[in-house]
Length: 167
Ligand code: SF4
Image 1 (cartoon, protein in one colour):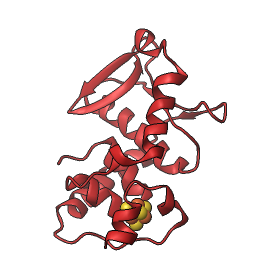
Image 2: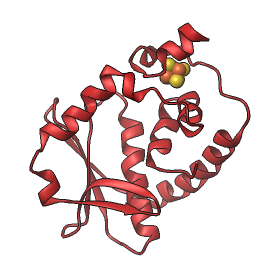
Image 3: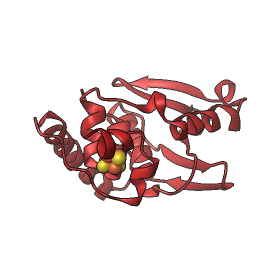
């Protein structure tokens, strides 16, 4: 599986989740939280698909791109894992740049909190993303699944039962 924005996000949340997702072990469809997140995505801005484009570039899907103002919009259920969200949007900007689209910025939107955050890509971010891509490739092609992280975020993870009950 090639590195994409979801893996960039998961890499910051939990290396084990990143490995499981990349290796085809998925439980998102059974998770109420993931379903709730999808609903917020679809219901918060029902008019969005008409106003903004859905893009697929280098096999990476960007749900809401405003081509006129060159802004990537990403909607999130909460701001609990902000750093991972920021990197996901930075990665979208990075991929657009890699394909010759300059001057792109991002906006993270948290409808339930009524908050937005502007996201920009710096030179330092570009260097970090190159390193992340290498790290993620090494991580997901490893035969060994990383250990559980025993974090409070685990209870809200779609892999919770797999990590703590099944294993
Ligand atoms: S339950 Fe915890 S350890 Fe398991 S994948 Fe999710 S975040 Fe990682």
